[in-house]
Length: 426
Image (cartoon, rainbow, N blue to C red):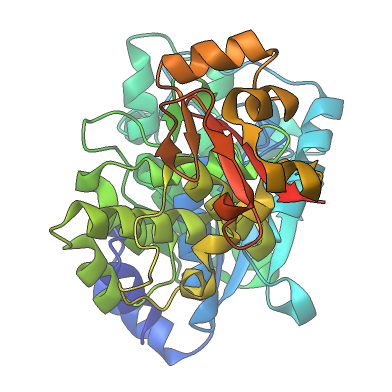
């Protein structure tokens, strides 16, 4: 499939220069393209994932990505989408963030044997001579036109510093450098980057007399109009130290029904026919299975298959599985994971075989395994209806737990909504 068609089918394209010419060029042979990432933190977050996934699709279609990390522009700050100026970082902080982002991008893009490249615009921006830049580059820009750029217009009322006003020129200069030195023909970015990107295509035409293309992605909002990727606790990060793989999985698992089709199309590599089928599920079980698949696939890309499987099993052990018998067809590797393996991911407590054979009062076992601090607390938990054994609520605190309760060699106790223990016989 032509890369333009692949992106369009999945909803990635918001705007482009001469779409017919760009589509034709993408069908003629490999195109070098770039997307920029400003190192304002030491981790990417979910807000970065839409362009990253588009880069992944373009690469899968045979094109060559350049991931540009803004070690230079990051010292200025992109005003796009911001109501106030970004905090200025030190050179040391910017450089540390650049190194962190490089590793995360490598999870999504293949940098082997020249198939992709990661560059840092600090290499050509930090040593720029200001007067030379103004004479050679600044003279090609009209202030009137710059004021029409979306990234500038949104900030004029709240206040835009001269430092930030320069950002458009710097981004245009980046595109010019990459076109001149690396043959980069296409820049991609968020829809609020349109003015900055076409400024670069114009600069390339004036200085090099060559063709260049621009393509932007839609701003991703949730069904309720809020910015996607934000939670009550803040941003959802790709760094597992900031957002654990389990929390990352749960973010996607808790997606709204109204957002399901778009999220499956954007953030998984499932065929679109399957995306349409999963998103059209009418039953609650079908929609929840689609969310499990979305969460697993998103976590697999960000954290690897092992971490995604562990998160899926842990969440299923805690909240239940949407399709434990695997009746809903999917091409996702999730189909091969057995829900009955979920207990193996839980904290485990071993009881002597003789005790289990004789039977252990439920309240005592809840206390012994650490789910409750004492027998009294366990009794109160059971009386309050907050305890279960193998998914069944415990009604009697003295109910004996015996070897007959073993399921595939284990018993699963649950206290409240989130605390679980796997009981095995030793």
